[in-house]
Image 1 (cartoon, each protein chain N blue to C red):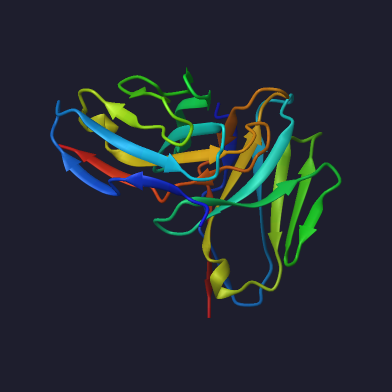
Image 2: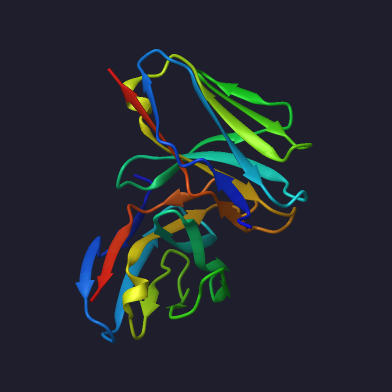
Length: 111
Length: 113
């Protein structure tokens, strides 16, 4: 079983729509969680960290559900520029620097 | 400008011909790492380095070597490339490895024929 699993999508949504997707992780000892964004043929970039209490950054909201071992990302009022692949990243064990990456969820926002 | 620079960005080579992909960062980061990205598999770590002269294997180190003689440079060496090493390679660095924030290079697309 993969350490981090994501629905590859693609999620095709119109501008202004809300889109949400999850990422599941297999190791219950996972400590830290992040969302990265990767534009087509570009390098990944950190979008946001995911805190236990959930967090919001503008139109982006991230949630963590430890009981069910998943994190989620919600994008409100989608813009064309939000079209990208979103990578779920999990740091497995505290004091272990290994980051495990999901294969990504592709979002396409259409005009 | 703070950045991670990889070269070459694109390379087509043949089986068995040794090659090196260079990686350099100008942010004085201690931690550096190499990943390969393949469709449907996500980023997989090849090697990482916590500091100068300290390197460790990641998840998929077979067929690769690295060195960290200087803080800013972390080259990836393929001594005898094979077609299964055809991939998109990313170098990344971080000030502290326990944060989740990695700064990636633009990627090197390698094709081994």
